[in-house]
Amino acid sequence: MCGSNNSTVCAWEEANDILKACHEGPTRGHHSVNLTARKVFDADFFWATIYRDAHTMIKSCDTCQRQGKISQRDEMPQNAIQVYEIFDVWGIDFMGLFLSSHGNKYILVAVDYLSKWVEAKALPTNDARVVVKFLKSLFARFETPRAIISDRRTHFCDDQFAKVMYEVTHRLATAYHPQTSGQVEVSNRGLKRILERTVRENRASWSDKLDDALWAFGTAFKTSIGCTPYKLVYGMSFQLPIELEHKAYWALKHANFDLQTVGDHRKLQLNELNELRDQAYENSLIYKERTKNLHDSKIKNRILMLVIEFYSSTLV
Image (cartoon, rainbow, N blue to C red; front, side):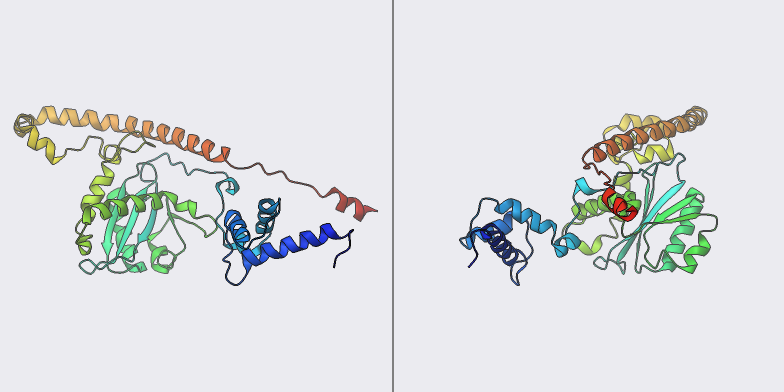
């Protein structure tokens, strides 16, 4: 038995043993503070500082700290990737493995970082050969970019891929900082959500709906740029089939248009396109700055403590 002088130490050791048994025992599961405390209560144990002791013990649990998710307060400050020219920086990534649709099991997605314009293609495999073919088509349509951002998978880190990336900077996301390719991940989620809601019962027909999903995604208003990606790329508003159905007079009038008048109007739209893209850059800059301030305001302050005693002891 413990003596009177050691009663506090014995009580702390007993409480610590109970917490460890309820938290990291063979059938306990390394749960959070509340669930661990609940297990202690179910075992008919109680003391006043149980929640504080459980929190201290879980913070020192090596397994929980390695496997647990990082909280928003412990994240690093945001550093936005701001692009001035359209089609200068593209993010590229694969989606899949999906249910086979006409032999296609993957979706290769590329998104422009300024306009948010998305290009995607359904593919049967996810090797470097199909990536190279897709990039050649992308460069032919939107000119050669300055940089491409991807993860470190083998189909993006290949000799064939490197040959196509002549004078193009290839930036790689790491496992420690996957937010580097965050824009393409956001586009992936958007396309997947549209496909899930449009395919419905016949899930094997998702490749037939991919073009419709791309159109829906590209004609949706984006808060970060203050307009739709379609307008930022083509310099004009898109026309939906519903407009032709309910605006018969409008369709009839434009069926016999004056080529000179339409040409002058299109020249005016092209001249306004640069102003529109400059405004989208400003909107994107303001949006990312506000997002960064909101994110960084929730991060706890870190104070670097200098171990003065260590240096003083070494000098003695």
